[in-house]
Image (tube, rainbow, N blue to C red; front, side, top):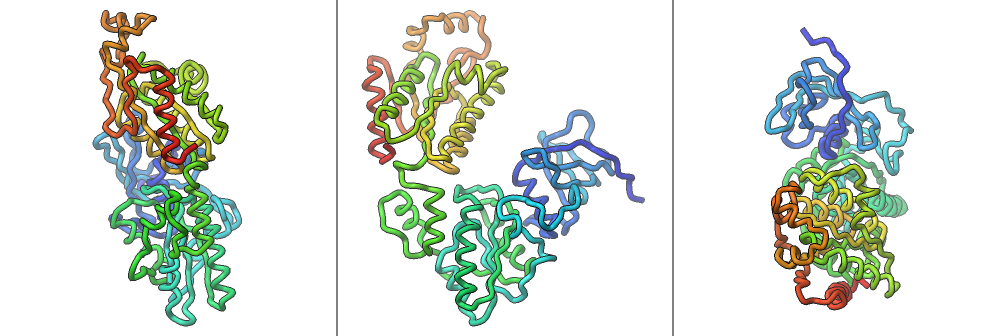
Length: 430
């Protein structure tokens, strides 16, 4: 006998889980699923108190808090700080066909409303290349179904909206050439492994098509050299696709940049960061923002303390804002202590989704940092008056991936500043 449903809490899952649920709502299971939709198994953050009982209805929301799906719990297990829920999924509310659900909402159609039988299906997350397009059109008269995947990426690349725009241009070109062609947008996660190919095939079949895979993929190296401004336009991409790639990755002097200084308190990182910011402003070719010190603590990170969790949260908040600045072509200069490698790696990933990231390790020795300490913070930390003080009672994990290492012992601010500016200039970023 089925358990009676009872309302449960609203939760915001990670982007991959949310997109997996959106696919299940379309009747498409991701690789590794034990059963076809509406059956699902999802991992969530543990709930406070008891785990949800069978019959509990969990509402899953997007990052904005809008309800997306409801999972009716059949079983729940907590293991390694994760809650695994098995159950069935349904939409959180009836969705009208014309209700916006992301960019190009009219193209986001379920298999039941958009099938193109016997079509050559191009399933892509990136701008379509000519080799794939040629493989899709090798059979005279065969319809072409262009499917753009929109969801969290494991490999940085253009925004879905730009890919959709470029693919619309190709769809219209195919139509002008007399070929029946349709374009749809499907939510899907990217795993960065063989599951991506398996999921692409499942999506193609769900919409009535056969997945197109070119015999020889285009040269990713040639594309990268062009994006970095060191080679001519690659011939393997049509102009609309090249435009989408360039929108994502402008030339270095136009591309957003996050410049993260890390080092112990008193190492000189804030002083150098300010000097570098001022010099970039003087040069006048880039817009630049400094995220550092008391200004960040009073506004962006107000209310945070100095525990490991709060220090991580402080750096992540700075990284989020810096990545947004870079996404829109600006330069963000940041100078938190950022003592933990994992946190710095998360900031790098945020920045490199849409721009460049340079890590500057201000590696001034601890003894020198203590000698400079006019506020007496190190002495108080050694006396046990300040808990979790980086370098004394809390570790500083020295980076092994720094783009530049500076020891400011005996080094003037001007010399340190100019070393950083030279690094930017040599990379074509000014």
